[in-house]
Length: 476
Ligand code: GLU
Figure: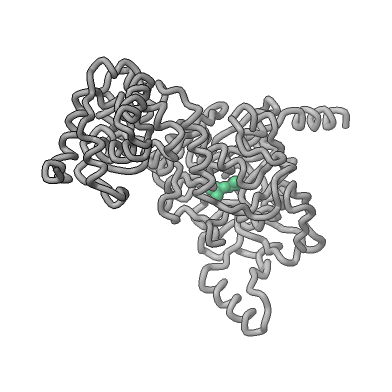
C-alpha cells in the first residue's frame, strides 16, 4: 500500500499533457487550439507537453501531413518535450498489451466474420433492437473456426462507466450501451481507442484536453484503462468552434489550416491570442501574450458552450500585434510577402512608411499591398471625391517641392501649412487634391509621410502627371 500511495503521488505531482493529431491533412485551427490548451497547462505547471502523431491508419495518413503539423508548430512556437511519438512505430508495444489482456482473460478472440456480424445486426434490427455484437465468443471454449479472429475486450456487463469531465461535469454511460468492442483487427492491427489508451498511459499523460467529438470514445478508453491496470487521466472535452453561421468548423473548411493564416498575413501571437479566447476567458481581457496566457490559463475555466470563430476579432487582434511589432521585425516578415519595393527605399524611409502603416493594416498581406500601392505611381484617380476639379488643379499648380523641404515629414507639414496660408487655401482644398495626385486615393497614410517617402522628384513627377491627366493645361 505505501508503495502504491507513493506511485500515485509521483504520478500526480507533475502535469503531463499531449497533443495527439491524426495526420490526415493540414493542422486546422481547432487542432491548434487543443494543442495550445494542453501546452499552456503543462508549461504553467512546469510539466511536460508531448506530441504524438496518431498515424496507424496508413490509408488515410501521410508523411506530408505529419510534416505540415510540425511546420505549424514551429511557426507558432509551441515547443514540445522529448521525441515525437509516432504510433506507426509502436505496433509491437500494442501487440504486447493485447497479448497481455488475452493471457489475463480480459480480452478474447472473436471468430465472427463480416457476413455473420451483418446477419446478426439485421436480425436485431428486425426485432427492433439496437444492433450490437452479442458476445457469443466471450466465453468460447470450443474448437475455433479457421478464419482470422479479431480481439475483443471483455467490457463490463452491468453498472455504468462514470467519469468527472473537467468541462462537461459528471458523465455516466450504462455498460449495456457498450459491447465488447474490437481492440485488434483480424490482421492483428490495434484499433484507435486501444492505441490511444495504451499510449496515454505509457507516456504518463494525466491531463487530456481534447475536442468533445471524442467524448463518446472516453468510456471505451476507461474500460481499457481498467483492464490494463492503468490510472486514467483527467479529461477535459472542449466544445467545438463554430463558424459565423453556427456550423462546426472542420478541416475541410477551406482556408482553415494554420499555415493558411500565416500566408494570409496573420502574426503567430495574434492567432494564439485568438485561439486561447475561443473557449477560455479571464474577465474582460482580450489581449494575452504567450507568457501571460501561460500564467493565467486553467482548463477548469474552459467554457462549456461552443465558441464562435470571428474573422473580425482575429483582424482586430492582428492589427494590435502588428502595431506592437518593431519595424525591423515587420521588415523581415514582409519579405515573405514578396515586398521588394520596400527594400528599394533607404532605411529611414522604410521606417517612416512602416510606422505610418502599422496602425492601419489588419494583416501583413494588406501591409505589403499598401506598400506596393504607395510606391507605384497611381494609374487612376478617385476624381469623384473632388467637388471642384478646376479649383483643385488651380490649388496644386503652383506647388513646387524643393529638395530642402524633405529633411523630415514635419518640415513638409510646415511647408504645406505655409503654402496654404500664402495662397489663401483651406486645408481640404489642398490636402485632398494633393493626396489624389500622389496616391490616387482619398484614404491612406498621412500626406506628410507620403511626400517624405516619395521624395521631391517623385512627388513632383506624380503631381505633374496628375495635372496632365486631369487636363489642367486645358482648365486655364
Ligand atoms: N488523433 C485524434 C484526433 O486527431 C485525437 C485523439 C485524442 O486527443 O485523444 O482527433
